[in-house]
Image (cartoon, rainbow, N blue to C red; front, side, top):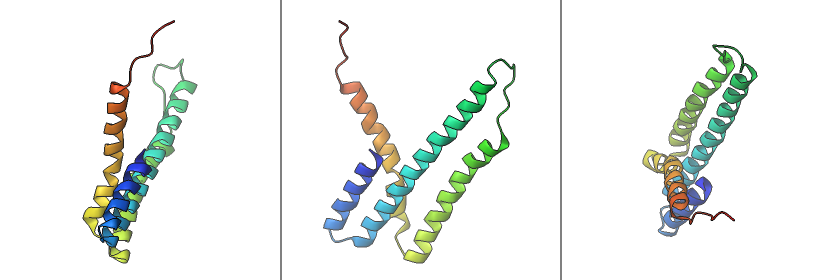
Length: 121
C-alpha cells in the first residue's frame, strides 16, 4: 500500500505541474517502502535469533542484528541527503513521501476496523 499511496500522491502533484515535488514524493515513498522491508527483515532476524534460544533464560541477539537496525536509518538519511543535495529536489517533498508509510498504516488500520467480521459456521 505504501507505493500505491506514494505514487498516487506523486501523480497528482505531477499533474499540477510540480515535477520536482512529484519526483521528491515518489523518491520519499520508495525510501519509506525500503525502510518497511528492512524493518520486516530485521524483525524476522530478531525473532529467529530469539526462538533458536527458546530454552535459555536470557536469549542473546547478535550484534549484527542491532547494527543492521541502526544502519537502516543511517542509509535512509544518506539517501535523503544525496537526493536533496545532488538532484535539487525539495526536502519537504522527500519528507512527505516518507510519510506515505504512516498514511498506509492508517489506511490499513481503517480497512481492518471497517471490514465486516467473518461469521463462524
